[in-house]
Length: 477
Image 1 (cartoon, one colour):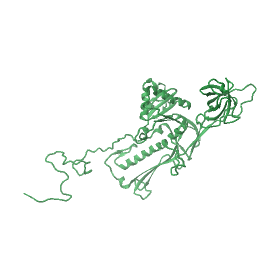
Image 2: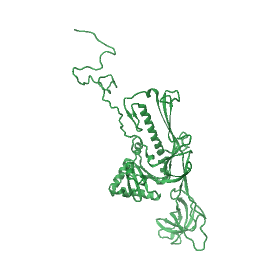
Image 3: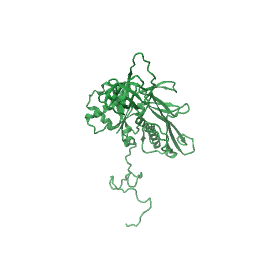
Image 4: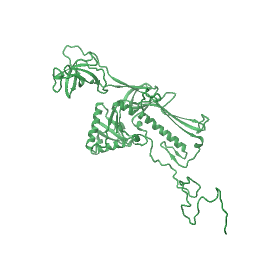
């Protein structure tokens, strides 16, 4: 029977074309990600993985400061500390070898012109033109603070010493090793006042914010989510809030590492900033470039590392140090140590890890001893992660001394020991700004405003104190 009947309209026809046999064919199976988009009106459901895949592993990069530092409250908007100068007197300068007069006196650390403290009657060890000699100070601070006069023990004048020519403005380095006086003479005049340097830093305010509207808080997702904070479930907004908090906690540490003080005259729109770890080492510490050059021959790697030990010797560095390295630098160390005695850790004390080698290994550290120094090295995720310093490059690692200093805490009213590297945060009896968080809106239990949303606010006010920065090393690529 022939028919001319046809049907049209949105309800006509079928979603799939039936088949005479029980089989999955292109004509009767809809792909959830097909050209028609996600379509749940189908008889074949996709095989669904409910749990979200953590494709980047543990994404947080914080914990560095937790390992090497401490956090302490402060009430002021500025922290000031002083550091000892060197005990012994040593200077650079220029000498007129015919007369022994030394001027243009500069500090051995700063390289800047400074007033000397050498007194008449002092004895010095000096070097001019690679010739080392001993000399007696005939005119010192009692005459002038920007010049002094010396006479060598082994000759009438400095230019009479073999290897030193008669000329003006020759470079001289010298240090005081004692004094000498003849019988019946008066005591040494003047006194050497201890030198110190004062440093300051100020806290900065770090904020973040998360919000979700009321409708979305009731939305149930079909993907089970989990985060670094441990939260899990099918409510996506909890995942987003958890990610915001974890990211903010990372920011608290990253700001302490990367912060810079602004030049107020450069741009009035830029806040004052603060001195972070990298900035402090660049201005007051040791900066090593190309320390971990992959092209360095294997036989030269250890001698080049020994050059670093000599720099530490010059600064009177402490024995135990922690190295936080990127992948290339860590492998460089492994290659360098591979040819050494396999019992290379035999002399380690592990004092910084409560004398426990197991604790060091559990925290991801491996150690070795070279010269009179103990080193504990570890990977630093912050330098390897592509979404942080791993994207920028230019930094291979950092060396942190595992030392403390004894200072008087006005809030506690007693002497306390603080790590060379520690965080100060604003706090008082009424407000603790270490890490504040609060909720506003009309959703999620909060009823502070009429807005149909929940807002989560984060705030912290803190700064980093880097004491004895001359013991820290920054490794540039």
